Amino acid sequence: MILGAILVFSCSVEDGIDGAVEPQGLQGIQGPKGDQGEPGQDGNDGTDGQNGQDGTDGQDGANGQDGADGEDGQDGNANVASVLYDVSDWSGSTRSVDLPFIPYSVYEQGAILAYLKSGMVWHPIPNTRVLTNSNDYIDVNTWMTEGPNGSFFYAMEFTKSDVLFAISSGDLDVLKIVIIEASTTINGKSEATSILAKMKSDGIDPNNYYEVMDYFNLEY
Image (cartoon, rainbow, N blue to C red; front, side, top):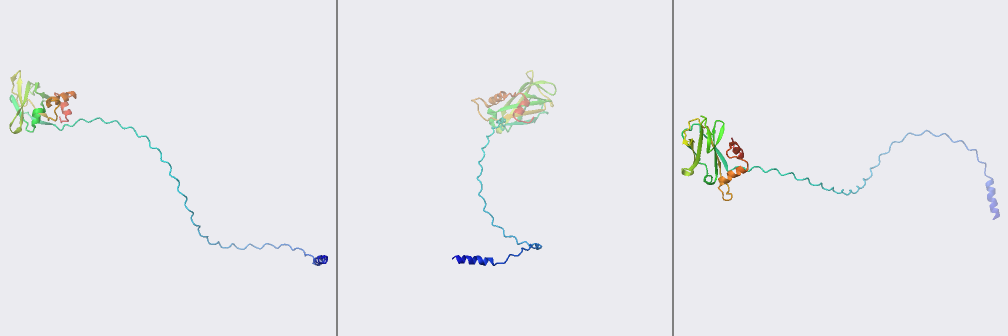
């Protein structure tokens, strides 16, 4: 066992001395840049994320206040009509006009308003102070009579100082008659009385031509 150890030591003594280390050579010139490689394939798209939860709806605003109700319009006047007559050629102490279109309900329960025009003035009739175009103040009395075939006549009589007075052609100009047909019965009163009472309660003077025309939406 001892001998083996000596032999190994003797062999290592016989190796030669290492030579001097040579200096490192210069680095070679860098070679040209190689061509760029082909682009790699696109990766697979990622999975879409989950949709977020919807937000909570906001509260409804308070309702606005209702606007004020408009005023009721005036009732229409489907049961009212008017007719004009040229009376500029009238003469004599009595005259009448035919009213064939008046229903019998008007004769019994309706109302008839009449106005005579001389110059620029409309005079309600019957009347005790109608000024003619000849400057005579006359009284005009009126009444209605029933004629044949369901027709009616509106008659007038002219007087002055309680004596029949004959007017002359040109003394009067126009006669306008307003026919108000009966529509309802009010507390058993005659319709004519109720119509006139309603007009007066509404502040309308039946003797005022212009107020009546406006009230019933009739032309002047």
